[in-house]
Structure formats: C-alpha cells, structure tokens
Length: 61
Length: 510
Image (cartoon, rainbow over all chains, first blue to last red; front, side, top):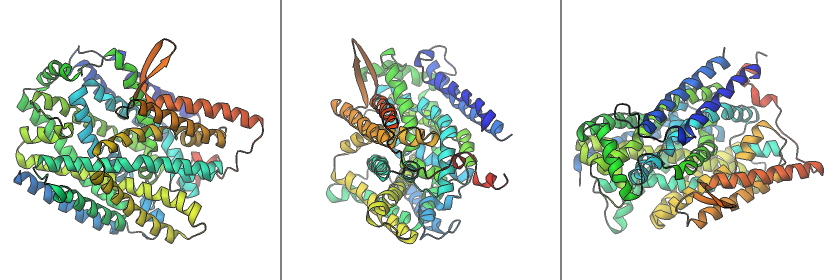
C-alpha cells in the first residue's frame, strides 16, 4: 500500500473504456467477422487481466 | 428422448456426486466448526479460489439466461461483458481488505464485519436479511438451468414425474453440502469448469464452422434482431441503461453472500488479488456464451421459451453425445453455485440471526450444527420455490435481489475504508434505497430493472439499483453530518486500522 497505491488510479481505465458506449457502439471496423463493439469489449477483457497482473507485481515488488 | 445425450449427462452427474461426498475428506478439518464447514478453514489457494469464484461468477443461470437475452434483445445482453470487466478492479482493491479484517477478527460473514465495525446488531441484521433474501431466488433460478437441459433431452414428464429428476438432483446436492460444506462446491467446481471450458471451446469452433463463420452469424443476427425489437449494435437510447446496469451489477456481485463466502475461503489477501488478474478468463468464456444467442438466431432456432435457446442450439448443431456433455456441464454448473449460495445463506442466518437473537453465548460446535441444518432448509426451500411457484416470480425476485444487494455497498464497502459514516445514517440510507429500488421495479411490474427517471423535462433510462443507491448515499451523508454534529454515538469500533492493511502472515515479520 502507501506510495504504491497511486498505481491504483490506473484501474479507472477499464471503467472509462467499457462503461462509455459511444466509444464502441459501431459495426465497423470489423475484425475476423466480429463487429467493432464485440472485439473491442473482448480486447478489454485481456487489458483488465494484464492491468491487474501489472499492479499485482508492483504491489509485491 | 435423446438417449445418448442422456447417458453422457448421467455419467457426469454420477461423477460429480461421488466428488461432492468425498470432498469432506479433502484438506481434512473439523467439520463441527463453522469456519471449517462454512469457509473450509480459510485455506484455499489461488487455484481452488479461482474455480470457486468462477463458479460464483458464472452459473447455469448465466449460461441459460445471457444467451436467451441476447437472442431477443441483441447488444443489450452484452452488458454482462463490461460488468465482468469492471468487477475485477473493484475486487482487487476492496476484497482483500474484507478478507484481512475478517481473518484478524474471525468474521465469517459480511454482517459479522458490520456488527464489529459499527457495534450495531440492527445494521448487521439488515445486511444479513438483504443477503438471504437476494440469495434464495438465485438458488431457485439455478434449478431452471437443470430444468432447461432436462426438457431439451425430452425428460419433461407430466404431473408428479415432471419434477422428479430435479428433486433427485437437489436432494443429492443438499446431502453432500451437509456433509462436506464449502469443500464440496470447491472440489466439484474444478470438474464443472473443465466441462464448461471444453463445451465453450468446442461450441465456439464447431458451431460457427457449421453455420458459415462468425461474420455470417453476426450478419444474420443484425438482419433478424429488429423483428424482436433488438439490435446488434447498442442503440444510443440504451447507453445509460447499459452502463448503469453493468456498473451496478459489478458492485453488487462482490457483495452477494456467496461471493463473500468464496472470497473469505481464500488463504490470503494476495490470493484474491492474483485471482483478479486470472478470473477475466471467465469473462472471455462468458462473452462467447453470450454469442451463442446469435448462433441460435443464425441456426434458425425458434422457441417461445428462450431458456431453451442454448440446449436446442447444441442439439441441432453438435453431435448428440457432445450435446449431452454440454448439458452435464450446465447442470453441474447449477449445483456448484447453488451449494455455495446455500452455505453463504446458512452462515448468515447462523452468525447474524440465530446467534445474535436466539442463542447468545453458545459454542462454535452448536453454530456449525445449526449452519448445516439451515443449509439443508435453504436448498429444500429453493426446490419448493421452483416446484410450487411459477418460474416468473423467481426471475422477478432475482431482479430485485441485485437491486437490494447494491444497497449494502455504503455499509460494507465504505465501511471498509472509513468509520466516518454514521450507523444510523447507513441503516436509514439502506432502508430508503430498498424502498426506492423496489418501488421502481414494481412500477415496471418487476419485468425489468431498467427504470426511466424523470428529472425536469428529461428522462434518464437507467438501472433502478443505481437510482436507489444514489438516494441511499444522499441519505447516509446528510444523516451522518447531522448525527455527528449532534454527537450521537457511532458505537465502539471493534477493528483497528492495522487489521485492514496487512496480511497476518506478513504482520509477523514486521
């Protein structure tokens, strides 16, 4: 905790990225047949996992 | 009657039954203690916790209900994706604090924490009752997952026989939950998830191949969804409803009693944080499960009973024995969370109602005994609920359950960070939130939790739980200011700030 918890602000990113539908409510561009809305949200699943992993490593440095 | 599907289903069900009963001998502990029966001695590591929390996060009901919603409404059903994305940052930050203070002070439920923090058995009772009320219909709904696959396999009999397979499944569940406690769902969760991942991976490769690829599936869905007033891309009218539902559901999920039980069963705060990074794999599976709704549209599945969308899709597009495998996964996916939920409700009842009001000062052995009996009652009660009462009511109650659980956020989550909020303010805020949320859902005839809020000349379509918690928080803050100004006692805090920040294992070295 302490100084390290400043990194926790990064956790706001998934909220902004996924809870603001105007960012992603469109069909194009598609990726492998998936409309934008769908692959964009799938991308965020990976991003939130990576983000949690990074913060875990910072916390336990 | 689909025999080969049924035989595979039956074999899987038999394996899970054996596992459930033998779980009591796994990491053997004294089952006469509530910490052993109800939290498995707080010793689950990263791996088991991952399966256990995964079992909470997506259940048979999810497997059936999410594609059913997507099948009719399209993009809106995908609120489940941002919901299960933002839940992990919340989990990472908040839940280890709850774990640590619970470990330090031997708390078994979130209400135990509230009792200790605010010195108010009434506030703890309010939180416990909210949890139990929200959990009961959720257990009942797990049964619908089993019912759906039984119906699809042609096992829907008539009269008394109609519910017989369901009754057998739940009696078995009740029996091994009684003997093995939280160890049973933890061990069966491992099998359940292997089955579910195999099913999802195979279904998401084989079905699109059969149907002409993902591009084609999305095309057909886009063309056909308007017929059911749905759309493939979220319409701007629904932006706020989509986001508020996702956000509210994420906060609520972690405070459901079964999520708290799953969390407190972990070995350390770090175990929970590691899981925040590893659990999103379930969100990925969930996304593809949701897409099954579009696959059903593209496969030309027509059914009035949308809970049959996925079972019918499997039967139509996959080899029959593999459909049976998937059905087994769904049915076992119902039993795992149902067991955790029953245990969580039993812990709440025993610790925060029975011990508090009926049997003060009784020993821990008595507590474990009562918890086991209550666990049985909860499971059989849920069974009665689903057999005797129209399914629709369970769904209504479950909708309300999410709204209700959200109203415990100020007391539990804020309470983990500060003692500033006043206990009487929290209690009244909770009450106002419950009333506002329930009446909003009632105005929508309980059919949806989305409520059009009129402010001046504008209408805001959003999740009733969010509107209710805004009212809740306003009441809490205003009353806290007033009560603190009047120097009304906020009770004796049983916890110390050190309890929240360090793992006991680390504290030894400091």
